[in-house]
Length: 236
Image 1 (tube, rainbow, N blue to C red):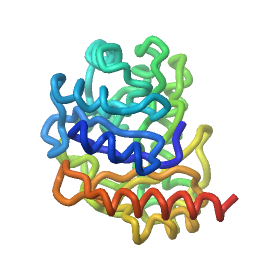
Image 2 (cartoon, rainbow, N blue to C red; image 1 turned 180 degrees about the vertical axis):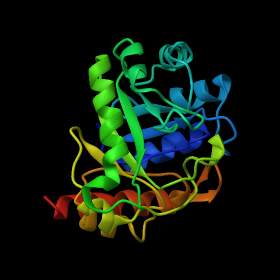
Image 3 (cartoon, rainbow, N blue to C red; image 1 turned 90 degrees about the horizontal axis):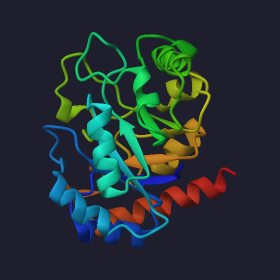
Image 4 (cartoon, rainbow, N blue to C red; image 1 turned 90 degrees about the vertical axis):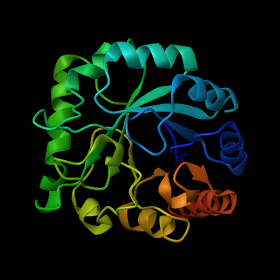
């Protein structure tokens, strides 16, 4: 769905700047408690500043299908991203069946690499969730592997914290049955190495290109996009 996504954009000016820098997807965060959380009014301003051809992704955690569909229609989102837990014992939880409740709106699913389980077992929870989604009738169009979190992590800290994924462990965990991206602590200085080590063809960052939470740094954004695209081209 995308190759370079800049997430947590909070202003129209930043949206226009990110698009001009060459990102092909922009994330609008609606997760309660996040320093990048948008309300509907601000979301409208950001969405309106994103040019045609740039993927507009709404980021949610534990949000009902009805509320996600309402925002997707009002803001003309191209996709929604589930960033809640995979496990029903943790909140906020995004159940597998929710993919099929979104009336055809594409879903991007954030998953976590289980660092306590070696090899392919590191993505076992993700595979189980995807299999359950398939059994319920619809699967994500794309998966983002983000940094691990604990069961009591607050919703606002489920992403954008700067924590890194173990790239070597991710490379050894195998693939999932849809396109994969890597997130978690990516910066202009390390994104090329992340692409080289994991072999993944898509990257996502929020805090790694900021001057402050929710405020993107134009130089960091430009450097990140340039480094990512060079690395992706070199890895073909």
